Length: 245
Ligand SMILES: [Zn+2]
Image (cartoon, rainbow, N blue to C red):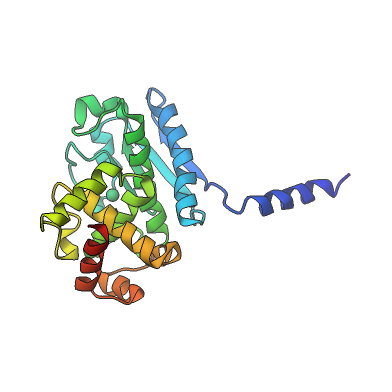
């Protein structure tokens, strides 16, 4: 009977090429949201791996901060985040993912509804996409990559499911009204930034394919990203607006 176990393990490996990465989940023992957040985190890991068709390269360090002070203290000082604003409830880089506990949102957050489980799930998947991205990028904390915000945020909006029909409709209306961004630097800005960035990442994903979206994770600048796509900034924006109209 001895050879059966290795055979079974081999069979599991073959039938399940994507295995959810090790998720190290840290929460205060008294946090009433911890169990629900951990469950959403584990399903979101699978969602992100399914989107990219690849496992997380490394383990995920997930911290659920019980209050704003703990949230701010969780960031490495090198990131220079300081005191965060009320709308910010999550952050993800290669080696760290922090979420402000939904138990604290009523007291110390704005623009977020702790009762909306779908919003929370998408938010967790968004930050986990940043973790996956950071683990596949030369700069795990995206240092010096501000010009790539359109893609860093856009791919997180896309993979998390935050590119909702309502946002797609808002982007279409903005393009029709001539108020869509004319520069990549302006994509992740203003009231419609989630829609603009998600829509542009979605266009790139459809036109060049998921394998290219994955390769773009390694880009450290717009110049590198545009070279991978074989296009220019004005052409990319014009083609996107034509397709998204
Ligand atoms: Zn983000």
